[in-house]
Each structure stands twice: as structure tokens, then as C-alpha cells.
Image (tube, rainbow, N blue to C red; front, side, top):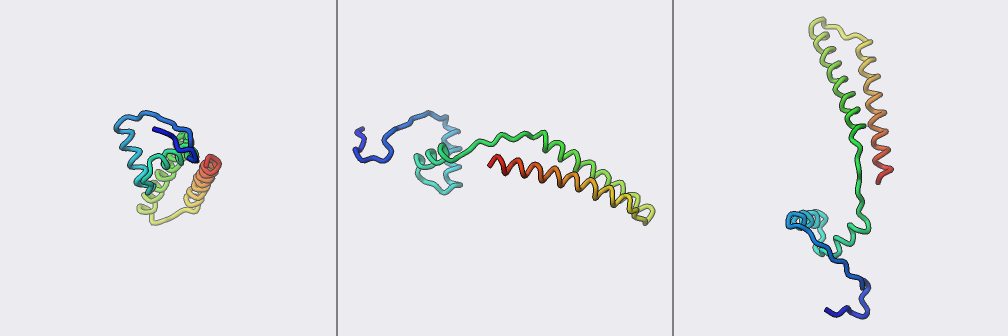
Length: 115
């Protein structure tokens, strides 16, 4: 096939995909509302990015949330049995929640840097 003399893009790139990869590309194109596969692939190759996430920080976050949940359950049992809520219990939960929010803000900051 002859290349048009005034073609803006005059270099052709060809690559192969598996059937399931093609179906995946088509699904992503539909989500992006792009019908031209060449345009979609060119846009993704030039402007797309790969995000590698270290889930170790998320494990720490989930562990902290789990500990808070356990504390809240213990406090709820104590309140239900004694009808008393102690300020120390409230302060401990607040302190642990501050730790969680610091970690969440740190993670969000890292995600923003990556984007």
C-alpha cells in the first residue's frame, strides 16, 4: 500500500496481540468512547502511564484500621455492660484515628506524585 505524500504520520508501527488482549483493548476503547483503534493506541502509548503500587503501606493501614475496630468493639461491650463511657477510651480511639489519617494522607501524597 502506498503512503500518501502529505501524511502527517508517515511511520507505521505493527504489533501482535492475543484474542483476549484485543477484546480487552476494545473494551477499554468503549469505556473511553474512542472508536478509532489507531488513535486510541497512539494516545495510550504517548500519554498513558503505568502505575506500580507498593501495597505494603496499605497493609499497614488495614492493620491499623483493624486494631481500631477491635478497640471500638471492646469499648462498645464495656459501655453496654456498665452504661459508662470513659474519656480514656475516646482519647485512645481519637489518637489511633489520627495515626490512620496521617497514613492515608501520606499514601494520597505518594499517589499524587506518581500521577
